[in-house]
Image: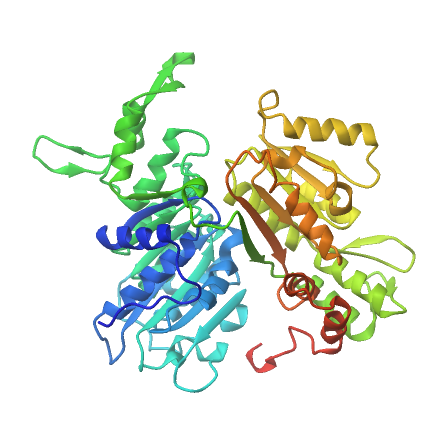
Length: 565
């Protein structure tokens, strides 16, 4: 094989080292890398290498990857594949949508082994003769997001499916599902459940590599998601877990993640010299100190050096402060897929400068300036009608930001979320509220004394060690604030049209006194909308007014490529 060429930007030193480590581990490894250090690109590079080394089947080399991720990361994998996939391969990346049953059926079709809802009722899993080979694009209409590349000189359409990639280069097929796909154990018959059906779909997809992104999501070893992950681990010979917070609550969080990755790592050798799988009871006996009521309470931990040594056998660790070649500010864009009501409202307002709600109320605008404001409100999930009553359209963006806070950054003691609108701030407050997290808000209506008190609590980690998420309107905190240096992560829900507001808001964290070495900035954006127009204009320093006018006059983002819908 010729020298491997990665896609996108040059990899950092720690990313190259992580890829070498995965190769040494034979594709069974844990990338314990903090957010913003580029673990997704490393996993994509490994998948490309796998494709290049795969044996040919029916004249093609193909590596199939199954990624299981939290909400905020599902379509990020599609976006990252578009950026980082090696030019030496063709690829197909898709975030699967639809019901749990439909997701299973789509996975089976991507593996070229179709299934139907009657599969489990008519015969046992894996038994009997498979149904005729179908088109591998079945269920493409339900995808949350997708991207692909074929080098045969034609445009790849979503309805082509992986079969449209051609055989001229090795192929990487990445299918992404949300963790909630593994959550249901609802019965389908006297002996089969939805989990059985999903597992059958995964088996028929036949992944060469399974990746658990933000793997701490399965830390509860008795949860349906964790148990299902254990069943999935037996399907693929190569498995990865990716997380920057491997122990969000305690060392016992390791068990379920390693049960998926390497179930024998913490096992024991019996009297017949046979290695047995680890059990949670033996794991907790080995590493937890029990006491309290009836001796069942965990009151401490022991043998932590032993735990870390075993983890180290299959791990590669990167902390932002140790990645010396990373820039001081790391920017990450998280794509937000708007709900159908939000999309319809955006289309109507963009095309007609007005829309009608289901109750007969209307929202209309008289000029482009007001239209721009309304489009931004729609991507934030709300819209005022002509009487001034705010109508909630959906919570897509708030849901994604909640996933970033609670799934991607569960170990961060301080996080800042910036919004533009008052209703957006209130929606964020409701969505972020969770046991163990204090949500503070600062809006234009917050009295000055309250603002000062909130900022002081946020800035005093020593005396206020609880987890605090500060949600603020960007205009209220972008200047003359020094207490935000206790946070290393800042999330933007909506951007101001003034570029200076963005720069000054980031500078509230990235300044003298910053308690970490790197600041990560997250942008939650609905692709193809005014969100991306404003952000791109701020990045390029171009005239925002002209960019917005061009966007408003263009076709609707969801009307393009209608043959694929």
